Length: 577
Image (cartoon, rainbow, N blue to C red):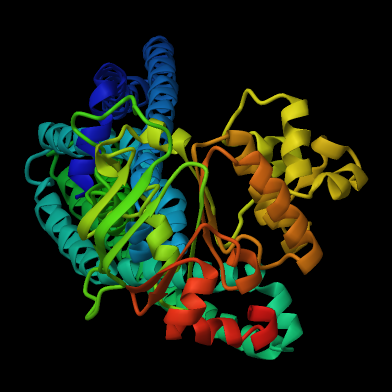
């Protein structure tokens, strides 16, 4: 998965990668040439006392060192830019795919996991790419080149390398094999910590209301301890890697000096050659250590790449139409015909053979007990998820065949849990219509019974709104969400229990203003409060995912036991009549 991810997203950067490899090759060749020059200075300059030779070759070494520095700086520059571009592209790809997900896919992964995959997981892959460009490209060149140069100096002494390199490879392989499962567990534990922390920050008021601070502290401490434990096990293995490598390196250096002294004594090599051989040994070992450092990062990056690909390889259950309809002839006629919906793996469907019609100029209400499928039914219209049976049609066209942008302009949804984005009142209201004027915003607020409280805010339309709208009350959030949909001016309005946080007076005033504003539009209201929907032109009663009654209030009171039970749970017999 890691190779596939890198190959896919590094393809546009072939030119800088090629230049980077060339620069790394030049700086590595310069590094390999320096010990040979140093050996010549010792054997032909220092031993013979030739100062001119020392100066001339010293100047040459300085020049080669400058070339090495310039090439290294250039390689790091291009490597950093390419790695940053890789991270940007992968994050964008994950974000774009998540944006295409329906509610089903988002629920499958969970918001905390998607956030971790988009940030931390991508960062791990980006860091691996950076280390590869700056270290790993030069490591094999230096290792092979060092071996060749060492063989050129003295073949018998190079026998030490035959034992050193395999031992290093075996040690590194054994440690890396144990690291990989630990890194996967670490990323999963990081997801858990992210989820718990997000729940506690979002649900802070609930925690304080029920005085559950101690319980939540214990829950976070447990998840944090689990992450710490696996991090410590991983850290212990990583800490073991470098001592093992350095032990092998130091033992090999001792062996080279020991056997090299005998070779000098027998006249097989000179002192300068032994010095150069030790330098090449250190370069070979350094290249192995660089590879070791990379191997430490590879297992975690592999796990992260797999998690990223799980997102990228997941297709949305809401598929854009191949030949989309870009224009609708009539205006706002909604029909749900025999619709059914079942979540993947669920034993029972949420909706079964639901049929209803909502026409322009009429108000259609949907009511039912908790869990009867009301919100799910409304979510089928804007394609938050697609039906698993039957059809949903807007102006006679299945919503699955309508261009997404056209469907978004035609259908306006006020969700059950209104969500406001960080910004200002104006930026939130213009979310569905960026070109709306201030007058249109104030008009929408007036209809939504929100003008008074917005005028009292410091800055009015420019008053700041916190993420999620946490700096305003629940009722104010609902009114701002309704105003946001009114600014969009769709042909079909879907209100998913959007008046539940309003007092009766505000509810009545809002419904009266909405009736005037949406007189020519199609309005579908899901509500628990009978008073909100009793005057609707058509009331659809849901029970366990089925339509068990359709009609006006007085008709259902007379003929439908389910509806009558719901009404009498809220109103007296006289009030209901």
